[in-house]
Amino acid sequence: MACSATAKIIPNPLLINSSRSAENSESCCKISAPLGSKFLGNKLLSVNKAVSPVDRRSSAVVAISSDVVKEKKLKSSSNASNLLITKAEGLELYEDMYLGRAFEDMCAQMYYRGKMFGFVHLYNGQEAVSTGFIKLLKKEDCVVSTYRDHVHALSKGVPARQVMSELFGKTTGCCRGQGGSMHMFSKEHNVLGGFAFIGEGIPVATGAAFTSKYKREVLKDGCDEVTLAFFGDGTCNNGQFFECLNMAALWKLPIIFVVENNLWAIGMSHLRSTSDPQIWKKGPAFGMPGVHVDGMDVLKVREVAKEAVGRARRGEGPTLVECETYRFRGHSLADPDELRDPAEKAHYATRDPITALKRYLIENNLANEGDMKAIDKKIDDIVEESVEFPDQSSVPARSQLLENVFADPRGFEIRPDGKYRCEDPKFTEGTAQV
Image 1: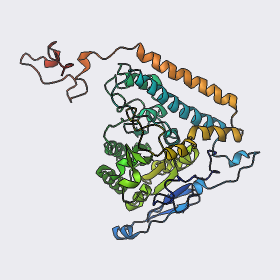
Image 2: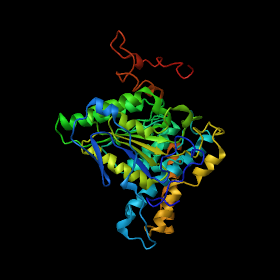
Image 3: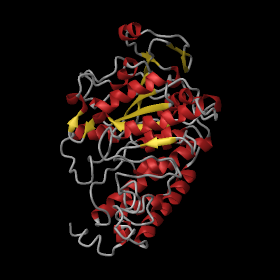
Image 4: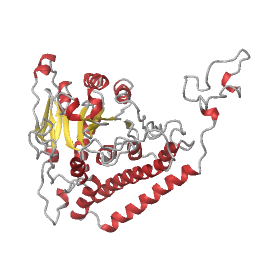
């Protein structure tokens, strides 16, 4: 399937008879606009009109096809005005997606060689979501992730060697080896963390968006920063999700809630765990636009992301975007992946987002095989170096153990002689054994 607005979504054969399937399976995207908003052309524009709680509660949820991703009949000669991206943009998207895939494949090799420990959750198959959203951001914008966070950090600009070093538990990692796979953080790149527990990152993202709102409206510094909150379908029945949707809509915060719906919460099918599997409908319930998009097509994701990010920058409030995607590996590298139907996995394997983008670029004369191979070689070298670098790096010293644990960065209390107890060489004796 070509990765473009010309292609039709291939319905999951396992979902055709379920409530998860769209009313119109050929629609690339569904947008449900709350009262007080209207969809005009390819823009979702807020109307400056107060909406009473009664009106909002009684509003009907209406699904319409988005003009942003409507089908266009592209001819083989390809008029550039019909294309959704330029050559430079297409190559940038391909490079970022290939980096994410190659990096995660290397992580699997290193994990099985005993180079990293604990749970490691890979992102293979979902690259279109990370790339489609994050590559539209500025450095000042914030990203909040989940435990499946390596690729989000890479897309935001954290060097591959720092991410891999963190996975190896080395001091050269982006968290000096104290975070590991599920806790990527970079102050420099405004990656506010991966979070091991589902839902706990959403309030952090909401707080970051509130900071941007405060700087813009109270401090009057012209701030137009936005925040992306990534989370999965399994999170969408948790309380933090609903509380933060309410708060973001109430205060019109510049945040985009991005649901990476890969259809499975560990081993629980999304269809079995929620009363209404169409997550995007929860947006209008709180007075914000709700969008469903094909998360296996980076160009469709990117077009929806453009509008959502633009709305946030203009001060028009939050958007809920459900990206229907699929992970190509088990929940984690410790998961044998025996619960998902082989037919379902085979179906989504044919819709690999990287293969689809590559085909689109070549078919529309935006790139050739030589361009693709050059990028592949460049990324392969980066990933190889990202493994060599932590191998030569040191593990954290014992003295680092208590840093960044308490508000007092030096440890527990002060001794009677006025010195910190943690300065006593015997203070951490036995800690490793415990």
